[in-house]
Image (cartoon, rainbow, N blue to C red):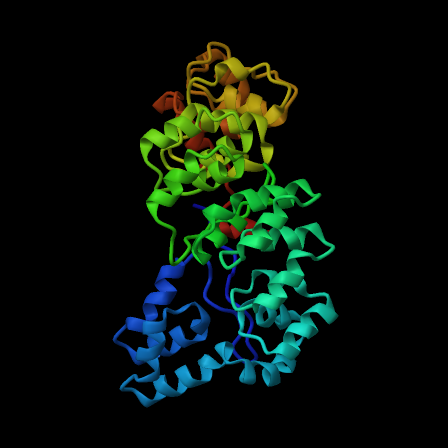
Length: 382
């Protein structure tokens, strides 16, 4: 699972939030930690805490925690949200409009400012605003609304007949969006193409395993892509999705599931260059069985094949520099070919790292390097 971008929201005087490489479940667990400083930090994500956690923090035995809880609870109080909006500035408005409980005046401001995207995702958006958004002229906004768990049956039926293909597709997914956690998972995938490298982070709360299994068996490719992005999917379902007719499903499985078969990782490596750097870090990525790709037109693919120990004749004369370097480091390289590569400045470094290099030859190379290094006093003279 790829992580690393920042999810924390900007707050005046508080800087950035916790980084995404920490699971969201850890951030939420701070509310129940023994140290009061950690419980105070939990209040910074007030809107994502459970009602029980909020009540405990408001009644916390530590006065500093109670004060922080009262301060953090403003996000769910429309009367307190409105006066705080100016302090957030332009960059902070999407958080307020997309997360907080909004007064009628702020809802109207969302429409007036054209910031309806965050409002369409806001689980606290009032029903009348959702109805307006369901008929918004932008298809992307209607698509966001079409999967909302709180969408009424009449609007849901109306959106199934929308003139836009994507909106109709999202309306078909509505039965799979019964909770906000499920809604969130859907919109981590919808609209992301096959070369998307956005991290898929751990949601908290997380949809149930049964929900992901149902997605895996769905006839909708988007739902199968959602299932393929969840690393907890069973081995049986992984096997089925690895053979899925939809390329997006196969790509997401390769990039996000630890049980993705090596042959699938190799297929995605060959066809989708955007994912190559990440795929090479996976322990299941095949290091052998790639020699059949030695004639591939892409030099990155040829370089992978050139490093296969089963390759009988590594392409040391390939026009691609990276391919020549990979061939020079191939342990199956003949000793006479290795010697000629050691004499070539372009391939000497990789040939010197070749694991098949005889130990006496390694020692000779090391001695030569040590003897060629100028002494400290000689270097100072120059």
